Length: 134
Image 1 (cartoon, rainbow, N blue to C red):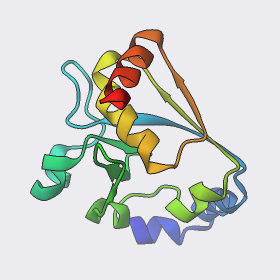
Image 2 (cartoon, rainbow, N blue to C red):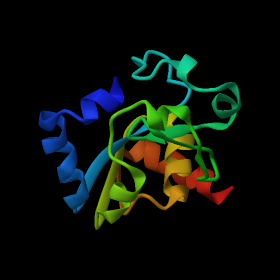
Image 3 (cartoon, helix red, strand yellow):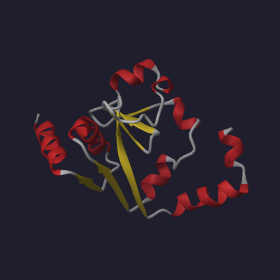
Image 4 (cartoon, rainbow, N blue to C red):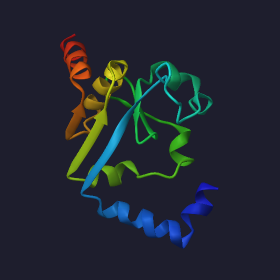
């Protein structure tokens, strides 16, 4: 289905712009989802080895551990989204997150090197600073 959609001219008009992105804005997801959070990604799509070490994701495709190591995922070949090389071409990569429960995900995301600007709330910022000091 993914490949069929990507071959559609209407979809290609959008995806072709991803090569020209100079500013990207994205959220930082937390894994597993925080209590009360509506899951945007069914956990059965994460293999067991990844789900035990992944703390978060960027663009719902790029999962990482607390050290900022990107984790391989079959999901990358199943989801339509900006490719990592396209994301890295953006001069500014702005990540947004809120809620103290996202602290491990934000720490891991910062360590990936994918973020140039981070926008978070004060409570989360305090917790991130504490975790980075450890």
